[in-house]
Length: 258
Image (cartoon, rainbow, N blue to C red; front, top):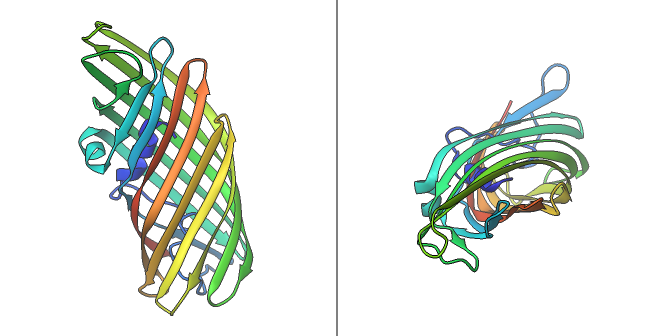
């Protein structure tokens, strides 16, 4: 994810849906199936993520970014996410799309004196993957997963005042990361369960990772809700363009199966 992609994930409850098998937000109960054996689900969610890391474009110094959730709310220009999931027996496939546009003046350049620093970022990500259930009973389910995430990131950094005067540069990059990991859940009662995932990989980026832990409540066979904490990081650098960010914060979600 580029800088903006992390922020879109953090903010888009009203317009986001994450693959239910990627967001395992329901207890391991029998899943409703269609006549041909397939089941489908979606999970709108809200991720109150802050952002910490660094970004750079060719010809300008690296910029440090440290924003909490309230900062991101004020800096977000536009955000959209959508994803889906389909399961057949022990197999599932999922996809996740996101777009975000952010403008902030809270960044700090390394080793350069400037009165003001601005950063504008547009990021699009698309992930597709598959999972396989290694173990499942009435209380527990454990899946392994693998997928690929495409990133497109555009960044403009502007410096003004101080010793540098007024200067602005922009750059963009496209890359793909492969990811592997696992996810699962465990029910303590017929209503209360814990759930989570862990993924790691790379490719275009040196490192790409994503972890989540949450507790959930099952309202019925169709609808459940979760609350927990998620952290995601990516480290990409190529030809003077750098995006090395960690986004982390509480997450709330609603999971619907059909």
